Length: 119
Length: 210
Image (cartoon, rainbow over all chains, first blue to last red; front, side):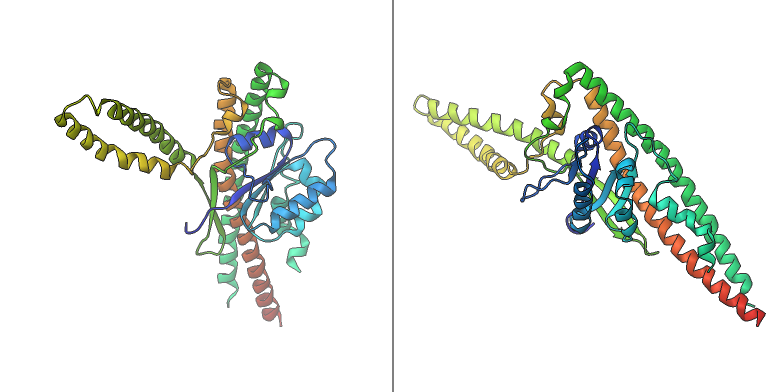
């Protein structure tokens, strides 16, 4: 456990972010950049995608938590991320229960038994 | 010749893969239940405090993370995430701070007022106290930069019990999230290994056919 620990980032609706910030993951760095994004009705997909990509490039973030319905909006960006750090974890949201068939990791695991793997 | 060991290895890895998926499923269910519990408590707190009092508007302008994740590579090559909470240490420091700051300042004032009135013997006693207390006072000034505010205080000093319960639930969710991330990494690693071994097996099969 040498060196400074990494942060957990959240992209989610208001209650999800509030909950995780209550849990103590919130940080505003020297440039006043937060490690969370509260997605509201008027938040654009571009903004979500840019924030997600900025979290991927930040080397102080270890895990990114994202509501599954938001992950669906930027699925291409999530599927393109193949590195193990930061780990991307899809979580349910208040209005959208967790669906394992949509989870990027489980879809990859499911692909293990598809015809493509035998080629 | 080499077909049987390759098949055995593949079978073992497949079993391991299935086990990992099963554990992941269990942890996922636990995580979902905890998150739901957290939301429910946040909603209850919002109902009792008012709509605007539990919202993003209440977030502090300065935030310090109380949880850090440490990642390490295991022997197999997958990444292990470990969640470490700094809050407990900070609270201990804060508690010790309050005890120390009140004590020495009061003692110091009393000493100054009483210096003229009291006899030399008493002065000696107070000087002893001073020697004892001064290092403590200095230590508080060293500790003061370490200020971790409990996020609960963003929402007020006397917050409903529900908000505290929500905090507890989300703290557990954070720990679980680190465990699930470790599992996900292990699953991806096992999958890659299985794919490469599958290819090896295909090669052996084609060689045997020829």
